[in-house]
Length: 198
Image (cartoon, rainbow, N blue to C red; front, side, top):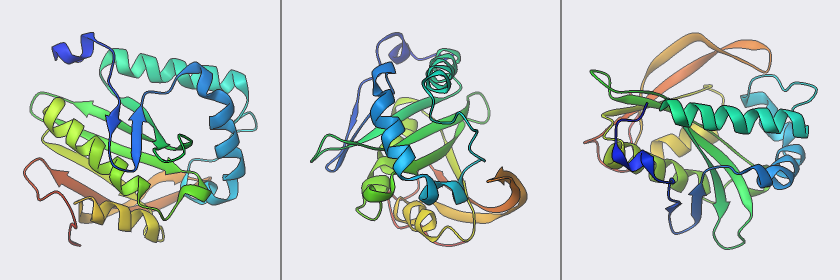
């Protein structure tokens, strides 16, 4: 459970120059299914294998329930990323595996619709969530993992101030195959951008 009084209120939106982040709502289903569906070939190489009912309304309701349960337990916060100029849903970012006590850490995962890639939206979203994690949740460390071949994700993390710390062998099962991942991390007192390779 989140110990901070902040979590007794509704979570505010996180606002940047290009994006606004807010928690997913039940009525986001159509827009979420549309952007995910049109971006399927773009997303599948970097995600767990899609289930046959991946974009169905029933699966969506289960997803929303999981988001709410994780938030209530204080273990994760999911945000949807909206492009400020158009107001359209562009992607999602989650701060998960939140631990307090001696760890004070969390893990970032994200996705973006194909037509929204390459415009700096995800870099800004990662910076906003990082600032939220450090300033509001008072975490000390944030981690992210990405497949070595995912050059776009590597650029996002490095522009957002994450540093490569090593290689995690056979770390996650992505698109049905156990894949190696680079481990990236950012510490609360690291400079805010342009991390360096480890």
